[in-house]
Image 1: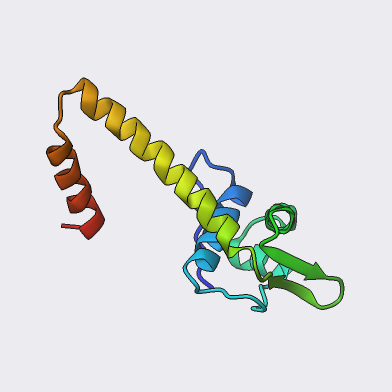
Image 2: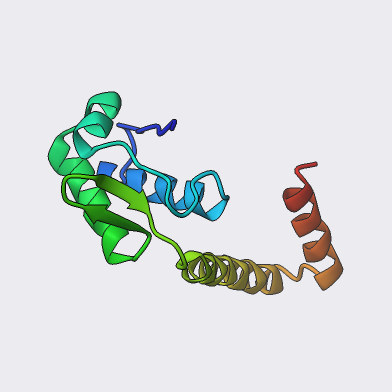
Length: 124
């Protein structure tokens, strides 16, 4: 598993870990039942405190995305993918809403906005 920490980011390190693991689960890289690295191993690999990885795992567990079994480790939980997708959809809607407001203020037509979205979506 390749996680990357941006030390220069204003986003807390534990939150960077949470976000990246959520993305791996959402995109099917990690699936229900997959074993996650131990908190100590992940901390060592990322060169961060065990307290930081513990906080990230606790957050993921609170959200129902992973389960931790004492003596066995942490695993990707099953059945919560729809909740995660819904969270992503809400964030997309929020960003699109702001984009539409800005476009209306700037008198950008619907067609122009749609074309811009297509360019970003298709990566052209």
